[in-house]
Image (cartoon, rainbow, N blue to C red; front, side, top):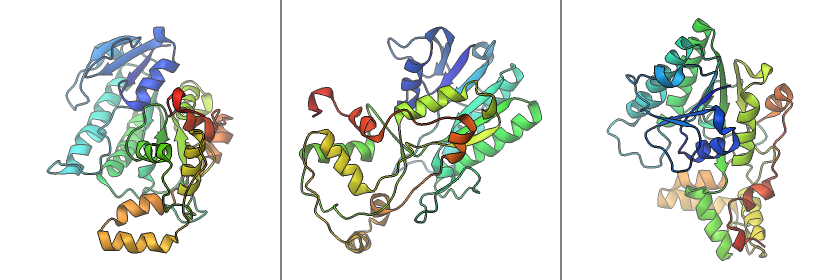
Length: 311
C-alpha cells in the first residue's frame, strides 16, 4: 500500500513518517529533511499545483500540511490567507486524489472546528455543529465540509481527525514555556486552577492515524482524539515538575484573581487559555475503532524532556 503524506516536515508529520514503513511512503512538500525515508516530491499546497505524478498508485493520502494557527497573524486578510491554503489548496489535492483512484483521504483537522472552550463537564463531540471563531478554525471547518461533499460526489473515502493541543518531543509554544517553568520549579501562583483540558501525546495521535489508514469502520467518519485523561493547569504543571524529579512549589491563588488581572492587562485571551476548559469526548473514537491511547500522560510528558533532565 502506497501512502502519500503532506506536511512531512511538521511536528506531526515527522513523527508519522518515522512510524510508517519507509517503502510505502511518498512525501509531498516544499523541502525534504535529510535522512527522511520515502520518495520525495517537491510541491506547494496551492490551487494550481499538479499532483498527478505523486498520486499515481497511491491508496491513502494523509493530509497534515496546512497554514497553521499563529497568535499574531500579520496577513492583511488572515481569513482569506487561511482559506487559500487550507480550503482551496486542500480541495485541489483531494480532487486530484479522487481522480487518481485514491481510496481514502485522511484529513488532519483541529479541535478549533468545534470551538475555543467548553462548559464544565460538557465536552466537545464529533457530532457538534462547528463553532469555530478564528480564521484557522473557520478555514479547517470549511475544508472539512468541502472534502465531505467531494467524497460524496466521487466515492473516495474521507476520514477527519480533530486533535486538541498536541505535545511530544520538540513541542513548542506555550507547552514548551510551561516545561521551562517546571524545570526551574519557580513558586508560581498556579496552585488552585481547577479547569479541565484535553490534550494528546504525539505518540497517541500517530497511533490513531496508523489505525485509521485501513480500519474498515473508519471510512467517512470524524474522530476526536485525546489522551483520555483531562488535566487542570495545576495538575499539568505538577506532572511536569515531578518529571524533572522535583517537588512542585505552586502557590494556590483564587481563579477570580486571574480574571481581574486579565481585564486590567487586556490579556483575557491568555487567561482563558490558562484557566479555561476545553474537553473532548473520545468515546465514539474508542468504540468505533476499538482503540485506546497506548501512551500515558506521564510518559507523554516525559517524552518532551531530554533524558539527562529526567528524574
